[in-house]
Length: 82
Image (cartoon, rainbow, N blue to C red; front, side, top):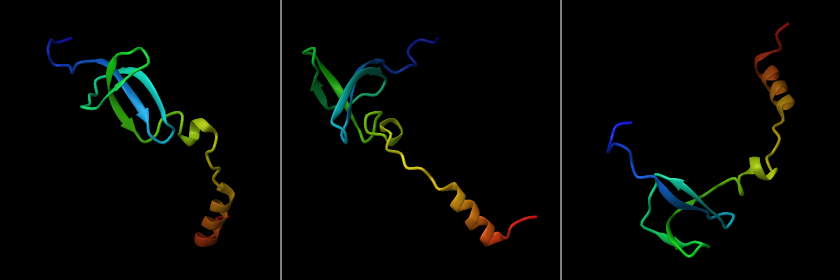
């Protein structure tokens, strides 16, 4: 790798505002906001709107699409092909 072209990579706390959940990971993102973590150290914090804790795909609350109704509506609109 070439020297001095990559952003610094360090610990960052990502905080899900919807679920009130936070996790510590490493990232190149930075922030002026900081938070004191469970280990007593202070880390930059990035607020996110959605994470695996609040996303419908992971929580099991995803809605099922009515594909049969869509096919019937398409056939009514454009005619059924024989």
